[in-house]
Length: 112
Length: 114
Figure 1 (cartoon, rainbow over the protein chains, first blue to last red):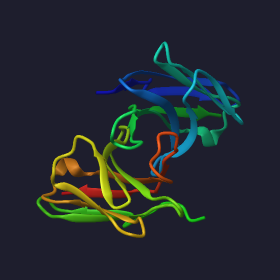
Figure 2: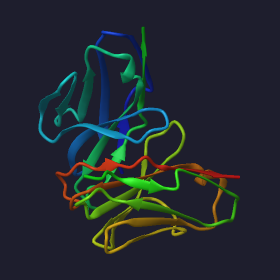
Figure 3: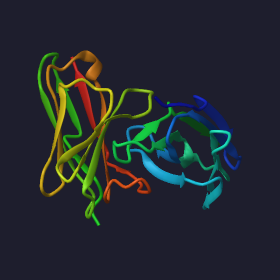
């Protein structure tokens, strides 16, 4: 089976930088995705890493180290609208298409 | 381009009843996945449909079943509802279900079982 660990909650102030770590244990690892979900909303795709290294998309960046089974999502210049839950999710090479296995989520609270 | 849509948005059922949830995939997408998200947890994979065939299933009992139609829309059926089935049910679509593809989620159906 697969397991993913990420912190349950992070609090930061506007303008700060937050790093959300994700460690995973899985066989057949293919890639790591990150999703944002506001309360009552749908998960929204943020980024995807299949190879080691950093992917930058505006204020958000994601990093992957396959050898360490570890990744992180970096949120820069935090804004109030970034208050949400953030999920890491792995894609696994199995017969079941491109299903995602999600972590438990990290709730980010941005304070003024 | 139309995104993923789901209906209904909210539903209340009683234990033992049956429910059908519906999903229309994003335009051009032929793969639909269903996930269950309990409060405060991450989504859990139920099953995936590709070109009207089930293409993988998670750890859910047979009373969770599904269909995909020729227009790639999909239904999730749950029989003999239990209190623990109360959750947000999410549908996600991707172009062909390939490994490299991103899944795009709909707004979900919030089911409450009393």
